[in-house]
Image (tube, rainbow, N blue to C red; front, top):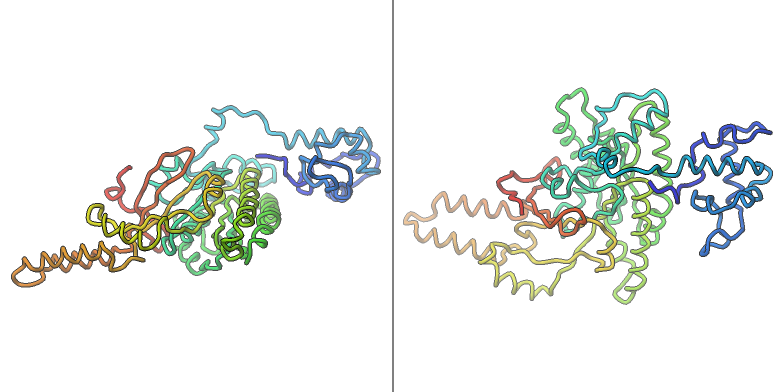
Length: 453
C-alpha cells in the first residue's frame, strides 16, 4: 500500500507515544497539536505547491529535521524530530516482498466473516484484517471469475459498460453484497444517476445470503449488509470530484479506524467503491462544444479513483454508458443484412467518454443482451416469424404444439439471456459468458450454454 498520500492525522498513536520527554502529553493530543502546526507551514514544500499545508506523509518526509523543528516549535526538540521521522518511516515504509510471498498472499475467494475468530485486541484485529485481505473480489459468477483470473482486482479501476437495462447497476449492487457476505468488507456506492433501488438491494442481499450460507445460524442478514454500504448522490461533475477527492477518502479512513476499534465484526472496513455512473454527470454538465473541459474533469475523477484504489487497497468499479458505433439507419441495415447468417439482432456500441477514458481503466466488462429487447419486431423477429409460418403451412391441422412452444420461447427469451464479455484486461484475453438476472442478481447460465471462447 502506498503511504505517500497517507494523512498525518491518521497516523497510528503508537508513533506519538513517549515521543516527548520533557512534557507529558497524551499521544492523541500531541498528534493533533503537531498536525495543527504543520497545516500552517508556509515554506516551499514541492515544486508545484509553494505555500501548501503539510498534511500527508509524503510532504512530511520531504522536510529536513531542522525544517520540522521550526515548524513544530516548541513541541519537539531536534532529537525528538529525528526520532519522529524515524518512527514514521518505520511504520509507513513497505517491506521488500518477493513474488512468491505475493503469490502465497493472493487469495481468489477471500475469507468470510464466519472464518474469522472474534479478536480481543486491536493488534490481533489488524493482523486478521491484513491476513484475510483478498487480492480479488468475486463477481458472483464462477465462469466470469475464471475469465478474470480471480475476479475484480484490488488496486485497479474496473469498468462495467452496457446499454440501459442490461444489469450494470445490479452487478454493482451484487459486488457490494458479496464484499460484505463473503469477504467481511464494507462498500461505498456513488449514485450519480439517482437510480439506486434500496428495496432491490435488500432483496438481493436476502436471497444471496440464504443461498451462500448453508448454516442458517451463521447467515449474514441483509440489515448487516446494508449497514455497511454508504451511499453518496452527487448531482454534478463538480460535486462528484469533491466526493471522490475528499469525502469518500476521509470516510473510508474513519470507517477502517472504527472497524479496528470495534470488538466485533459488525463494523466492516471498506474494500469496494462503486461509481454508477461516470458518464451521467459529464453528459449533463458538458455539451459537445465543451469536450476539453469534460476530458479534464473525467481525468481528475479517474486520477483520484486510481490513487484511492492503490493507497487504500480497494476494488474500484465504475459503471459507464454507451453510444452507437453507427447511425441508427446504418445499424438497421447491418442487422437486416446479417441477421439470417449470425442469428443475432445485436447493434454494436462503444463505451462513452471516448478513447481517453479507455486508457484510464485496467479491465472493461461489456454487458449486452443476447437478443436485444430494444429492437422488438426487428429483422430477427421477422425471420423467426417466417420460420414459424413455414412450419404452420406444412402442418395440415394448423399450428402444432411445437410451433406454439417455439414462438413462446422465442418471445420469452428476448431480453432474458444476456452476455458478459471481457473486452479489455491486462491479465486475461477476450472471453464471454451468458447470464440472466434473478432475485439474487446476476447468475451465470448453465455450463452447456457457456462454452469457453
